[in-house]
Length: 167
Image 1 (spheres, rainbow, N blue to C red):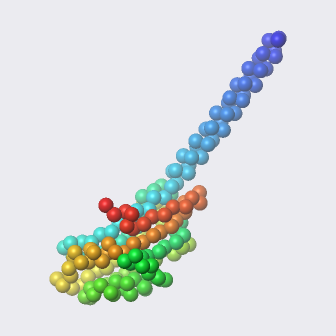
Image 2: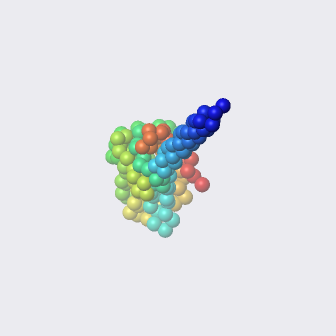
Image 3: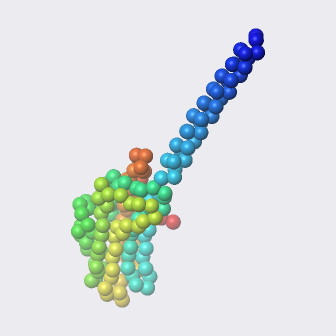
Protein backbone atom coordinates (compact mmCIF):
# COMPACT_ATOMS: atom_id res chain seq x y z
CA UNK A 1 0.00 0.00 0.00
CA UNK A 2 1.21 3.39 -0.80
CA UNK A 3 1.14 6.24 1.75
CA UNK A 4 -1.65 8.12 -0.07
CA UNK A 5 -4.00 5.12 0.21
CA UNK A 6 -3.23 4.69 3.91
CA UNK A 7 -3.82 8.41 4.52
CA UNK A 8 -7.13 8.24 2.63
CA UNK A 9 -8.28 5.23 4.69
CA UNK A 10 -7.32 6.94 7.97
CA UNK A 11 -9.10 10.15 6.91
CA UNK A 12 -12.20 8.10 6.00
CA UNK A 13 -12.16 6.32 9.37
CA UNK A 14 -11.80 9.64 11.21
CA UNK A 15 -14.67 11.13 9.19
CA UNK A 16 -16.87 8.10 9.98
CA UNK A 17 -16.05 8.35 13.70
CA UNK A 18 -16.83 12.11 13.62
CA UNK A 19 -20.16 11.36 11.94
CA UNK A 20 -21.04 8.74 14.59
CA UNK A 21 -20.13 11.15 17.42
CA UNK A 22 -22.28 13.87 15.82
CA UNK A 23 -25.27 11.52 15.53
CA UNK A 24 -24.82 10.41 19.15
CA UNK A 25 -24.50 14.05 20.30
CA UNK A 26 -27.68 14.96 18.41
CA UNK A 27 -29.51 12.09 20.13
CA UNK A 28 -28.33 13.22 23.59
CA UNK A 29 -29.28 16.83 22.80
CA UNK A 30 -32.76 15.76 21.70
CA UNK A 31 -33.30 13.83 24.96
CA UNK A 32 -32.12 16.85 26.93
CA UNK A 33 -34.44 19.18 25.03
CA UNK A 34 -37.37 16.85 25.65
CA UNK A 35 -36.65 16.68 29.40
CA UNK A 36 -36.11 20.42 29.68
CA UNK A 37 -39.71 21.11 28.60
CA UNK A 38 -41.35 18.24 30.48
CA UNK A 39 -44.34 19.36 32.56
CA UNK A 40 -44.72 17.98 36.08
CA UNK A 41 -48.18 18.50 37.54
CA UNK A 42 -48.71 18.05 41.28
CA UNK A 43 -51.98 18.42 43.15
CA UNK A 44 -52.23 20.36 46.41
CA UNK A 45 -55.02 19.48 48.85
CA UNK A 46 -55.27 21.90 51.76
CA UNK A 47 -57.75 21.79 54.64
CA UNK A 48 -57.08 24.72 56.94
CA UNK A 49 -57.56 23.94 60.63
CA UNK A 50 -58.21 27.42 62.08
CA UNK A 51 -60.45 28.61 59.30
CA UNK A 52 -61.84 25.36 57.98
CA UNK A 53 -61.51 26.20 54.32
CA UNK A 54 -60.60 23.77 51.57
CA UNK A 55 -58.45 24.20 48.51
CA UNK A 56 -57.60 21.70 45.80
CA UNK A 57 -55.22 23.13 43.23
CA UNK A 58 -52.78 21.87 40.62
CA UNK A 59 -49.32 23.32 40.04
CA UNK A 60 -46.95 22.78 37.15
CA UNK A 61 -43.53 22.25 38.75
CA UNK A 62 -41.95 21.23 35.44
CA UNK A 63 -40.09 23.20 32.81
CA UNK A 64 -42.69 22.99 30.05
CA UNK A 65 -46.33 23.71 29.42
CA UNK A 66 -48.91 21.02 30.20
CA UNK A 67 -51.72 20.68 27.66
CA UNK A 68 -54.85 19.25 29.31
CA UNK A 69 -56.52 16.28 27.62
CA UNK A 70 -58.97 14.66 30.06
CA UNK A 71 -60.28 15.60 33.50
CA UNK A 72 -62.24 13.08 35.57
CA UNK A 73 -63.59 13.38 39.11
CA UNK A 74 -64.58 10.44 41.28
CA UNK A 75 -66.21 10.62 44.68
CA UNK A 76 -66.28 7.51 46.87
CA UNK A 77 -65.05 5.49 43.88
CA UNK A 78 -67.98 6.59 41.68
CA UNK A 79 -67.36 8.77 38.65
CA UNK A 80 -68.92 12.18 39.09
CA UNK A 81 -70.11 13.84 35.91
CA UNK A 82 -68.58 17.30 36.21
CA UNK A 83 -69.60 18.96 32.98
CA UNK A 84 -68.69 22.45 34.08
CA UNK A 85 -67.58 24.42 37.11
CA UNK A 86 -71.15 24.91 38.31
CA UNK A 87 -71.46 21.18 39.12
CA UNK A 88 -69.07 21.34 42.11
CA UNK A 89 -71.84 22.53 44.49
CA UNK A 90 -73.92 19.48 43.51
CA UNK A 91 -71.14 17.23 44.80
CA UNK A 92 -70.24 19.29 47.88
CA UNK A 93 -73.91 19.91 48.74
CA UNK A 94 -74.20 16.31 49.96
CA UNK A 95 -71.82 17.07 52.83
CA UNK A 96 -74.15 19.35 54.76
CA UNK A 97 -71.67 22.21 55.17
CA UNK A 98 -73.59 25.26 56.42
CA UNK A 99 -73.22 28.43 54.40
CA UNK A 100 -70.24 27.57 52.26
CA UNK A 101 -69.09 29.48 49.21
CA UNK A 102 -67.98 26.93 46.62
CA UNK A 103 -65.95 27.89 43.59
CA UNK A 104 -64.59 25.35 41.21
CA UNK A 105 -62.76 25.15 37.93
CA UNK A 106 -62.85 22.34 35.43
CA UNK A 107 -59.79 22.52 33.18
CA UNK A 108 -60.91 22.73 29.59
CA UNK A 109 -59.41 19.91 27.49
CA UNK A 110 -58.03 22.53 25.11
CA UNK A 111 -56.39 24.65 27.81
CA UNK A 112 -52.84 24.60 29.15
CA UNK A 113 -50.89 25.29 32.31
CA UNK A 114 -47.57 27.10 32.02
CA UNK A 115 -44.53 26.21 34.14
CA UNK A 116 -44.58 27.48 37.75
CA UNK A 117 -48.29 28.31 37.52
CA UNK A 118 -51.12 27.10 39.74
CA UNK A 119 -54.77 26.64 38.91
CA UNK A 120 -57.47 26.27 41.54
CA UNK A 121 -59.65 23.24 40.94
CA UNK A 122 -61.90 23.56 43.99
CA UNK A 123 -62.17 26.15 46.76
CA UNK A 124 -64.63 25.97 49.64
CA UNK A 125 -64.87 29.01 51.89
CA UNK A 126 -66.97 28.23 54.95
CA UNK A 127 -68.98 31.12 56.37
CA UNK A 128 -70.13 29.54 59.67
CA UNK A 129 -66.82 28.31 61.02
CA UNK A 130 -67.82 27.19 64.55
CA UNK A 131 -70.30 24.62 63.19
CA UNK A 132 -67.79 22.72 61.03
CA UNK A 133 -66.15 19.45 62.02
CA UNK A 134 -62.70 19.75 60.43
CA UNK A 135 -61.97 16.01 60.62
CA UNK A 136 -65.25 15.23 58.89
CA UNK A 137 -64.44 17.80 56.23
CA UNK A 138 -61.00 16.26 55.77
CA UNK A 139 -62.62 12.81 55.37
CA UNK A 140 -64.97 14.11 52.67
CA UNK A 141 -62.14 15.81 50.79
CA UNK A 142 -60.04 12.64 50.82
CA UNK A 143 -62.90 10.77 49.16
CA UNK A 144 -62.53 12.98 46.09
CA UNK A 145 -60.11 11.81 43.44
CA UNK A 146 -59.22 13.70 40.31
CA UNK A 147 -57.47 12.14 37.33
CA UNK A 148 -55.90 14.50 34.85
CA UNK A 149 -54.36 13.45 31.56
CA UNK A 150 -52.10 15.90 29.80
CA UNK A 151 -49.46 16.19 27.08
CA UNK A 152 -46.12 17.92 26.74
CA UNK A 153 -44.80 20.05 23.88
CA UNK A 154 -43.34 16.86 22.40
CA UNK A 155 -46.81 15.23 22.52
CA UNK A 156 -45.80 12.78 25.28
CA UNK A 157 -48.73 11.54 27.38
CA UNK A 158 -48.78 11.95 31.16
CA UNK A 159 -51.33 11.31 33.89
CA UNK A 160 -51.63 12.54 37.46
CA UNK A 161 -54.11 11.65 40.17
CA UNK A 162 -55.04 13.63 43.27
CA UNK A 163 -54.96 10.54 45.51
CA UNK A 164 -51.63 9.32 44.15
CA UNK A 165 -50.10 12.56 45.47
CA UNK A 166 -51.20 11.86 49.06
CA UNK A 167 -48.38 11.75 51.52
